[in-house]
Image 1 (spheres, rainbow, N blue to C red):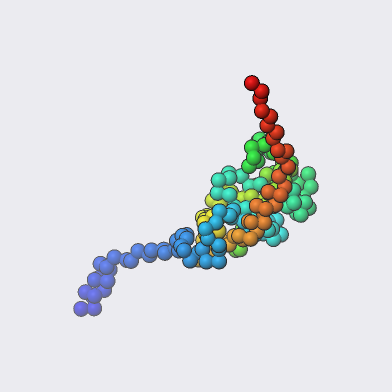
Image 2 (image 1 turned 30 degrees about the vertical axis):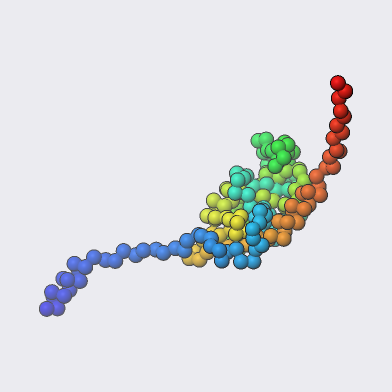
Length: 192
């Protein structure tokens, strides 16, 4: 009988181990702490080049990572830290932006670190940097402007970066205040 049981055990197929990983999703609970409805940009803090950097905008529509003069100066980067970058770049308002070059730096989001190439521009922005799809993809992250969060897997758990709604509003106000004054148009009536 013992022999029969041993043979029966060999006939039972081995169980397939199924790996269960948490899903990257957003719910109404993720909106807690935000003022709804809103149309604010997703502005977060990241550790870039070993420094905590505020006012980093996550732009899902951008295919590049941009660094503005405040961050360039704050990281004490010099021209010799840059490599050439000669592809034209346009700002949000459609103007061609003056490029200084590009530099490769680590971006740390909590426990995950991703090396990225930043294009360094010489243009005004209330943001210190803009990160886009390439950074999100490298991190394996999903962002939601509605929920003002970025979520990604770190091992067996979901980590999240929470956007600052007040910082997004401050950046918007700074952009509005920075706009050059436009002289009102003077219309004259034509005589017939």
